[in-house]
Image (cartoon, protein in one colour):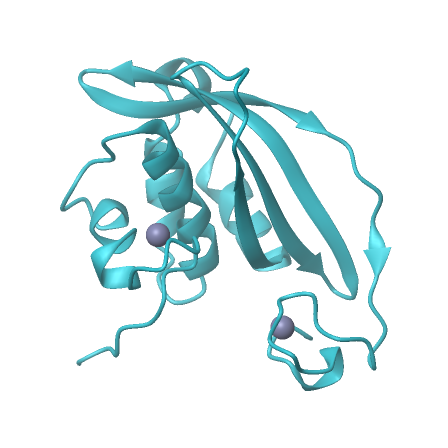
Length: 163
Ligand SMILES: [Zn+2]
Ligand SMILES: [Zn+2]
């Protein structure tokens, strides 16, 4: 079945098929920590269309961190939230092994953000995610008549992001 190309979830401006999909499908490997980070974000977003995405998220944990995670938890989180945007933060203090990002997502009508500086390491020549340090932010409640925080221009009640 042919699937139409759509803009990648990670906001790179490329299509999903030209951006994160080859990584998630195991046809290519991330060349930078940021690429790996973006593809893991997209894997969460794409999970409802392909449950294999949780496999990718688990496999891209560094082996020293992987035992703390499992497929069921990853799948539960992916199903519980609706990611609406990813921002990569340009931060001069970071090393070449770190990425600072802010991912926004909805849990019901609550807008939450994951603001994290992530650490990556190479393992057998491939970038792997180790762990991250989070910055806490307040949770915002979105009313039905508010603009959807995804930037679609639609009211929340009309946007695909209201569940
Ligand atoms: Zn992407
Ligand atoms: Zn929306």
